[in-house]
Image (cartoon, rainbow, N blue to C red):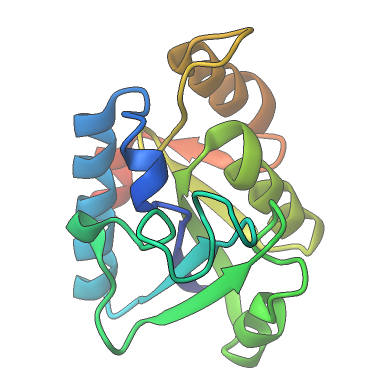
Length: 174
């Protein structure tokens, strides 16, 4: 079996306070994935976005903090990023490669921004990407509801192209 990690991207206080689509189910699914990973002795890696000085996601600010309900353990690795992709100028690829990682279980916020960029970047770098259904989310925008964004990107764009979108329960029963 390929070595795998759980990548938890941008589940930060300021975004959660916007109440993303399917918020309760989303958080429940992420918590289940974290428990699953820990039970399987799979490393849980957190990625946190910094939008720079004066932003609601400024380094060290309250909004920048990883959401308390899924807070990392002291032993968990946290990668800081400034771009949508968790791979751009973070050292994440080098770290994963040093550990022999071939598979990434990807969860987090926001579907159309950092999860999309991270998914496609991981695909380009030849990782196998698994997206458990319901474990990424976003908020409504001027063009689409959060639900529409989630469904379109997960099932029309990613699935069987850049990743495998698999029912959460199926992942948890592996």
